[in-house]
Length: 142
Image 1 (tube, rainbow, N blue to C red):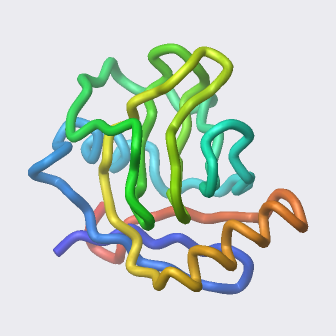
Image 2 (cartoon, rainbow, N blue to C red; image 1 turned 90 degrees about the horizontal axis):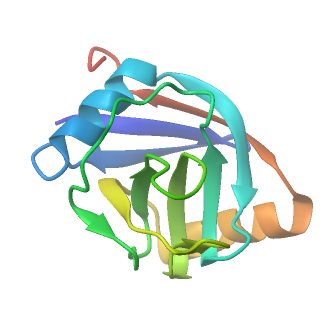
């Protein structure tokens, strides 16, 4: 089974890919990963973190497996319909939104992390600011 790897602050998290639920979004991620960037605390959405990916040239993606209210551990790809492109990691109660209003991101994966690990990750970005992040597919999956 395909997995994503998230390396954040000396920790590695895995996420199960939802290929059948969001095939075009997952294919787009295969084209632009691996990625090194910064993980930030969200400004508008609640208990979540995000990676800005405006520099990525995404194809036009449909709304697939999309949600405004991701569950804890959900990984969303937002292709920038009304705001900047991003990857969102829901760490707790989240309503995905921006100054443009509520946004629906494509749920592409689910992070394998406990409630406590996600709370700590969100708290880290809230208290200490941007964290280095590397996102990639597991070996042999690219």
